[in-house]
Length: 113
Length: 111
Image (tube, rainbow over all chains, first blue to last red; front, top):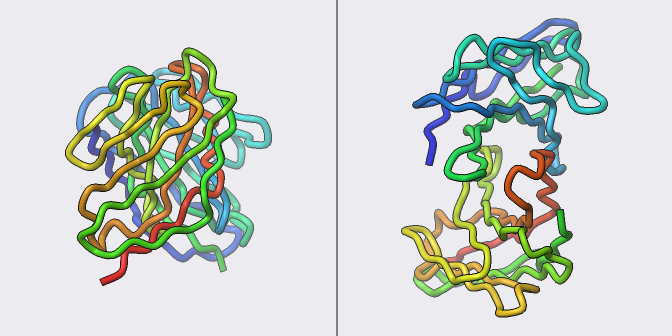
C-alpha cells in the first residue's frame, strides 16, 4: 500500500485567490497524479506530475490554472489559481504501486466563496 | 476500460456479511477487477483487486465468476465504519489513469 498525506485537508477560499495543495508520499514513487472530484461526480484526472519536467495535463486542464510541481519522487504540489466557485471540489493526489494499483490520498476539500 | 454495472444502494446489518455485486460483461482478457470505497468527503480507499482467481486480504474477499463477467466483493463482518460508496472498476495494467468510478454502490450498515 502507500501512505499519502495531503495538506490542507480542507479550506474555504475567496474567489480570485489561489491555493496550493501539498502531497507527501511515504516512499519514492515513479507515477504521481492529481484528480478532481466535483460534488456528486466521479473522479476526473487533472494531470500526471512528472519529476524533473513539466506536468502532463488532460484535456480541459491547463498549466496556468493548475500549475503542478514535482521536485522529487515523494512530493508534489497542485495550485488552483484564480479560484471561482466552480473550483469547489475535492482534490486528490494519487500514486501507482504494486504492479499498477492506484492509491489515493485523503483528499483536500476546497470550497470557494 | 470495460464498463461496470453496480446496484445503486444496499443495506447490511452490522456483523453480517455484505455482498456487493458488479457486472462487467465486456471485460477483456488482460483487465483486472479493482474495488475501492469512498467514505464521505475522503479520498477513495483501495480494497482489493483480481484477475481471475478469488482473492482475499485483511479487508475483504473478491469472488470472480469463471467467465469473468461478474464479481462480488464480500465484507465478511460488516461494521458501521464500512458504510461508504463502493466502486468496481475494470482496467488493464498501465492502460491509463483517467479512471471512471461511475456511481458505485452506496452501502449502509445498520446497527
